[in-house]
Image (cartoon, one colour):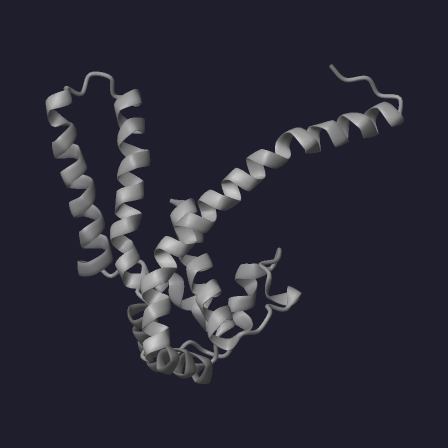
Length: 187
């Protein structure tokens, strides 16, 4: 679940960066006092919450609920089946349906995710920023960015994963070389 939320946050940050073509200052990185910073911000008004919600709808972030559910089913169902070995295979589809229904209710009926995300958007975007982003995402280019971002992020993650794997051996060789230089033998 943390992985999915990180994807949502990454997706939003990536889109905002593209929209404004700016680099993120280092001070925007989450810090030890990350949550405390929310209380120092100007009050999060109902108006700003509505604008944040509109921004999330325009960027397609609200549609990520389906993807979150798919990921959760992939991760959670096998875990349930490992723990509860007495669950008959004939009920697996039923469990998957209940998971999907549960998430649908949480995301659409109870609207339980938005209140958790409002403080994040409030911290990083002013009301003026959000209005500018919404205007951008309503343009043809903004709509294209919404359309291509999910596969772009997914493909980028695959490329990044492969890149990371390709670096393991050279990195381990470098570490081993350094340890030997320091007189530490490893096997």
